[in-house]
Image (cartoon, rainbow, N blue to C red; front, side, top):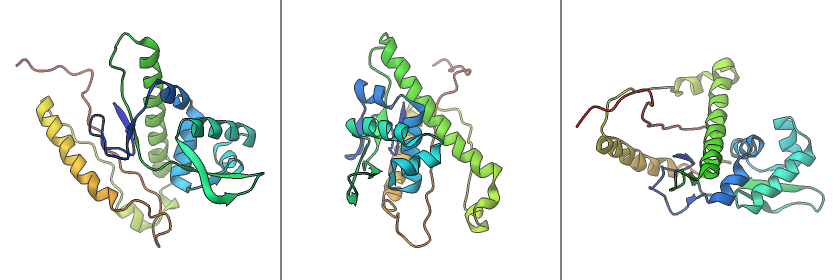
Length: 205
């Protein structure tokens, strides 16, 4: 249903994984998702550095980092850090957050909803941060920024065609991965959302 750095549920790339119940439960905390977002935007950070960014104590961020590491979301930066202060980074590759196959599994459905909700809130916060402070980036960045919504009526087959086209486009995005040290590069997010409007009605066949 929702993805992070992925093409979409059911269309996993080799670097993607579908989260199991234990991993979803570990991720179902707003601060842990915010930690992942900060590591994506800033690269490797210490617990103290993260604490300053998210407004928490270093003890809190350290605890949540250890829980994220336990479930494979983050890892120690090889060859960096000391016994007193560890450096953390996101594990490479994306993951897929899917609703459980059993719709009566109330606990798993609720956990999935929590994770999806927090990721969407994190995305919205970053969009609003730019809207509210556009002068924080240069004019050249604003010229290449797009916020676009396209409204269509589609069948499921047509929607599948659109998502397949996005999967092909995502291969272009893959060419620009691992550019943290590339001159002139800064962290960006690319969003693609295709979803049925729940208040709408499906036309009869």
